[in-house]
Length: 555
Image (cartoon, rainbow, N blue to C red; front, side, top):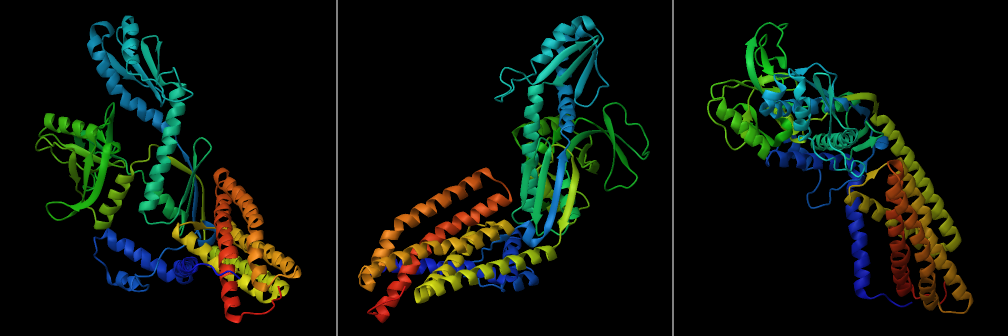
């Protein structure tokens, strides 16, 4: 048999060695997982480690690979939520933020429209009453200038606002095209914010998908309960900076039109009456980090974007000596008095925080506020016991499949069947190594893909060995028969695996969820089976023939 060149042998050997090392952490899953968590926590703490983290860090050698296959919800247990985004809240917020702009647009038309006030209207509608209805046309024209073109494929030629007259009232709503575009933006923003929050909380491989027009599916493996996940996601972390009108101790006091009555977090029994429209909101934050104030108490430092920095600076310059409320989720966490013009768009939030609370608040602020409330329609906790049962069943299926394939190959091809089984073992090791290295999530359908790969992997060896048998019957020597078997079977092996790979890729790009998990393991399995069946098996047979130099072989 023609010997492969030395560099090919070394390359095949190195690939196999890498597969063994890269797949090894999965044999010590719990220990390596604790090691990886300790590494991540120590990095967050700027290299400072606790005694428990030192123990976890020492549980696995740093010089060995530590990447693991992430276990899906059905294997590890975790939390499942289905939430509905209240899109109508976004329309209300848009109209609330539009009112100051409309009021400013009317300022130059006072002689035509008279006094302007906001009238009660349903959420998502802005109704403005003019004391001089004769100026309605001029008012509508001025407000329409605030409208912008809708930039979507379906909204070409339409504007963002619909402005109509209703007696002495001007009625402003979002156009139908803008509502559709707003819905898409809101859902996309909600998806990204939820993903950021879940990822920063240290969980692994969450599944976060949009379903229908207003629903989001959230599945997070490894989290304790659906209530814990709901508490994290449901926290809006809505931060605003509002002018303070006055303080009071009466919880039932009427705040007045366009004002809010909010409790103080630090001073029990104290309430702040603040203007409903904020000067700056958390949406204009670009960064938030846990820090300490001048008294070495936990705090959160923040920085605004250009627009927020300008508004923040202008307001503080014009209101020196006035209190300024920092509002978080409906509570006034701090109301400092503006001492001077604050330029640069940065500041610090102080309050009765612990270090953990300041860190969590910074995480939520960095992720951003959810653009609308979420109503959770379905919540489910999958216990780790169910995941353990699934893993046990998957292992049993894999073992049964491996034993059945090995028994068939050895019974059919004897010693060369054993070589094929060794190559199959290498194939499984490489498959696990690649899944670990790319951070793929293993699910029950993924295990099914692995089991299917074991059956497909020996197909190539069957083609090769049957071809070798034909060449031996034709009178070829063992070495030449082996060369001919590998060379002449390659085209059939390549064609069959390429067609299987194309189907798996189509499943990956078109499918979702479990279908994609199956497609990933199947695709990688096809590639590794081609490598092991053609190159690893050949190398094993080369070594055997070179060592024993048999006069005849039985395949």
